[in-house]
Amino acid sequence: MEDKEIIALYWERSERAIEETDIKYGKLCRSLSMGIVDDRRDSEEVINDSWLAVWNTLPPQWPKFFKAYVCRIVKNLSLKRFTHDHALKRKCMYEQSLEELNDCAGRGAAIDDAVMKEELVKAVNRFLGELSDNNRDIFLERYWFASSLEEIGERHGISKKTASMRLSRIREQLRKYLRKEGYDI
Image 1 (cartoon, helix red, strand yellow):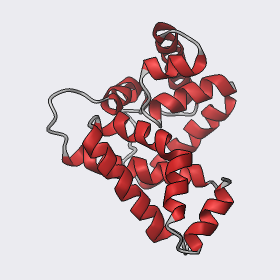
Image 2: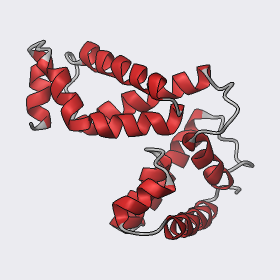
Image 3: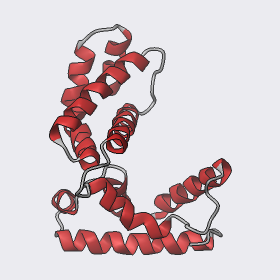
Image 4: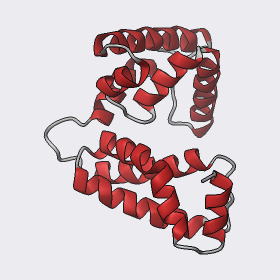
């Protein structure tokens, strides 16, 4: 079913909208949530809360990019759960992927300021726009969807080691790009 049709079901207040959302994006959303909360029960609870959040926001909203809209809700609720349950002793995939990006975040830059954060986001988006489609997909899968190196390798037909090396090179490119843009990395 097309996204517009699913959104129309939400606007009609048909419970089938949730079923269709789960059919189309459930696997992706569960993978995203698991990468962050690292617990199947918590992940399922996040997914259920996410479907409720989508239900409660449609209408009045009519998102242009439904997949991104749903994933953002799942990610935000997963991050809330992760923050709440952060007492876990082992690192989840999300925490590991954030550590990888830590050197590119601009420790010396005063990014507490909302304007600086917005400018940094714009710079990263420009950088992503310059990457090849394949490298951009790999980067986003790791750092937005919190996919494991194994999952990335499987999706792109490369080994875990190759995925790791490619991500390392992309992070180095990002670091250089941000320095060129004036960020103190």
